[in-house]
Structures are given as C-alpha cells and as structure tokens.
Image (cartoon, rainbow, N blue to C red; front, side, top):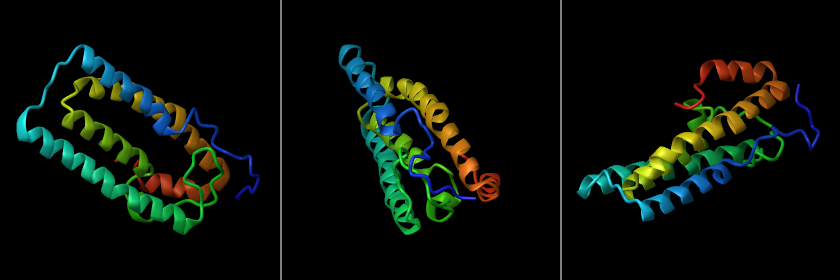
Length: 157
C-alpha cells in the first residue's frame, strides 16, 4: 500500500516549531510590556523544570524510533513507516506532546502567563494545520495498518 513517490508528503502548514516560535516570541514581548506573573518561588522552578525535563526525556526516544524505522522526522518529507514503539505506544504525536510540555515548562519557569495563553492558538494551528493533515496522509499512504494504529493509540495523550 505504500507509495514510493518522493513528493508524496503530508502537505502540512509548517513544521510545528515554526508554528510555535512566533507565539513564543510574542509571549516574551507581551511579558516585557505587561508582566503579569502567576507562579512564584520554588514551585515555579520545580513545576516548570519538571515539565521541561519530561519533554527532554521524551525526545531522544522519539528520534531513536524514527532512526530505527528509517523514516524521516521532517514533516516535509515522505514517511516510509508507521512507528508504534517507544513513546508512540502512548501517543501518535509524542514529539508534539514534548514540544508542548517544553513550552508550558518554559512559561512556568519564566513566570509568563502570556506564553500559556498563546499556547492555545499555536496548538490549534498544529492540530489542524499539521496533525490532521499528517493523519490524512498516513491513511492514504498506509491504509489499514495506520487505521489499526490510530484505533489503538490516542492522538495526543
């Protein structure tokens, strides 16, 4: 069922980090202009640092699984395999989960609620502009194999 055409890609809006970055920068600017603050003291570093740590623990396994499957990590390249091991047993999008946890962790550590507010539009853009398009692509490319995986593993968490 796989298609070997090199130009067969998901047609995503943009790579997720490119979608997240402008909102992150806007959050930093808004915090510089209108600082609000919401988490004080040691809690800020423990909670935010913990989220950043979890994000950092997920990504090496995601990258390892892409390497083992010999498929591209880039959303702009064709997929050659469905990955169902490692973090992909729990989420169909563990890299995006890790990126989101990193963002929340940074927002907490930096005591920047603007970043958390701007996370919602960024996640919605990733969901509709990347994830949904990737899913349609993987359904076309891998058919029943992807349908089975999709039925057994949640999209996010």
